[in-house]
Image (cartoon, rainbow, N blue to C red; front, side):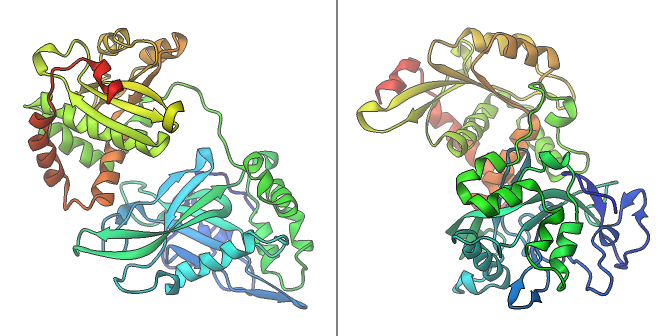
Length: 428
C-alpha cells in the first residue's frame, strides 16, 4: 500500500470506490484508506470520526479526520477561515457551530473534538485518538474533488470565541481549536495508513496497534506534553522563496483579491500605503503581540518611509519599544519589485528598528539573497501574503466585501497622514 507524504494531493470524487488505485494520475483516497469489510473513510464534513471499535474491555476511536475547505470561506457553510501552517506544526481550526443562541459544545463536530481533547490531558494517553488533517485544494482549475494530506496530530488548546457571519449579519458562539502537527521525520516523511487500519481492527489491542505508528506519536503517548515540541513537525527550508511561492495560485480566491487590490490602487497608488499599514498591523499582532499603528508620511516628503508603527515587547518598566518603518509598493503582479526600492528602505533603518516592505508583486532571488547576506532586519510581504492577510481581515472583522474595506481605508488615509519625527512614537 502506498504511503502518504505531507502535501500529497489525492483524488476524492464520486462515485466513492476503492478502485482504481489512481484517478487521472492522482492516488484515490478511498484506495489508500480501504479496509475490507469496513465502511469507507469519508470526509463529508469538517470533522469526521471513524466508528469506534472494541477489543475486550477496551474501546477506541481509530481516528478523527479534519477537513478544511478554503473554497467555501465566507459561505453559509464556512463563515470563517482556518489557518494551516503545517511546516511549522500548527493548525488553527474553527468548530462546526454556526447557530446563534446554540451551545457550541452541542454541535456534533465540536462535541467529538472536545471529547478527544479530554483524552490528551490525562496521565494515561494510550486511548488518545489521532487527528488526520486534510485540506481541499484547487487542482486542474477545479475547486472540488481534490484533497491535500496535511499530516496528523492532536489538539493542544481550545478557545471559546464569538464569530461574525457577515453574509447573514449575525454573531454566534463557537470553538477555535489549536492543533499540533506531529513530525514523521523518523519515518522518512511517510505516513503509513496501516496504523489507522490496525486501530480499526477489533482483534488487536491498543499496544498491538502501535507497530505502524509514527515514533513521534509513541513518544508523546509515553511522555506527554513535555515532549510536544520535540515531536512537532518543523520543516527547514531554503531561506529564499521561488516566484510561485510568493504569488497566488491560478484561479484561486487569493489571486482574484490581489488583482482587485491592484486595480483599486492602480490610479491612486499613494493610498495603497493605508492598506500596507493595516496589513502590517495584522501580521505583527498575530505573530508578536502588541503592535501600535503610527502614521502615514506625507507623499512628497516620505524620505524612503511610507508609514511608521511600533512593537511593544514586555510590560511595565522592562518594556522594550521597537520602531517599525514601512514601505508600500503597488506594482504589477507579474514583475519583481525593484531592488533599489528595498535598498532605499534598508538605508533608512536605524539600530533597533524593523523594516517592513509590502508589495502586490514578489521579490527576486537576488534581492532576497542580499537581504539574507547583509542580515537586514526587514519583513518582506509579497503579493500572496498580502492577499491572504486581507482575506483574513475581511472575515474576522466582518466586512461584506473587499470594496467596502478598501473604501473605508481610503477615507481613513488622509486622517493618518502626519509630518512627524519617527522617534516620537517611542515616547507615546
